[in-house]
Image (tube, rainbow, N blue to C red; front, side, top):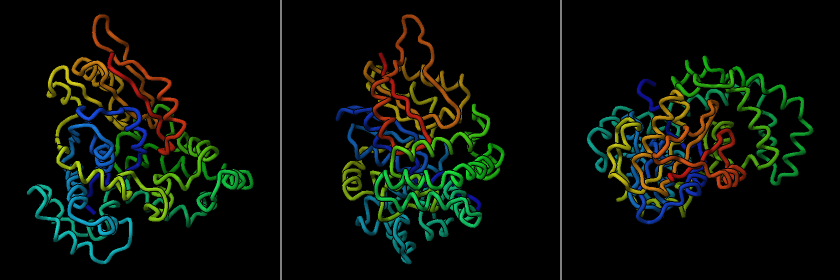
Length: 359
């Protein structure tokens, strides 16, 4: 369907961002809006203001609708409206929420009732592509081993699946290499992150990360893997923090602290109060930017924010580090111990998180 947002669901473990940033009650948090769930999970985790920034207005419309649903629906109705649980009444729920939206967001969603009817969580181009890919993979037969792993209730049983199906696990790598080849992914989603791979074929690289991750963690504990393999979240398994009963309640109570900003992320450091303590959750924007532009963004953050401000970002296929410090100017210092501890528990599977602090 024309006019889909690029993203509509969570694909990162926001618990890791909260651990990396450790916001105090008066701190400001800046995050990339994308599918909106990251902002709501961070909002429920504490801090003061939360600025959700995106240069794509449709991504802010996704977040605005999710926030309105969080505020206006019961927890059970929220899950059903968004698409976690089945529901024939999503358009009726939409009728009760539309008045809470800004005129621009209301016009956007009024023109796309099919996306609301099918569940907003799965409205994005990425999510639609994942659903099609999962359906194709099942027909092709290369999703059998993950299905067996999702059925495992402990790590020993999952490792036994990986061992007994080693040939199948190795053979499925070719499917990933094709479906996530930069050219294929670009044609499907128009997502520049897949064109900025420094490892040739991100599909092959990410598949190998998946197999290594599955040797250390239960696959059923990752809502991202459920989204990839089933094309949707498992309503009875792991969910993003803001979609759990406790997380939804925490985020709902703090909706007044949420601000939506339609702007280029690189312009934001100069617009914030000079010397304020601000924490930045940058997701995988390094995949969208050239190495030079990304280094410039990190340098601007270090120059604009007070010491103790933190930054976290994720590498997908393209690997970015911290820029070299300039003499006499504030710098970002890597937090290696914290980064390693977060990496060991992170459920984002494919991403590699970097945590740093302004010094």
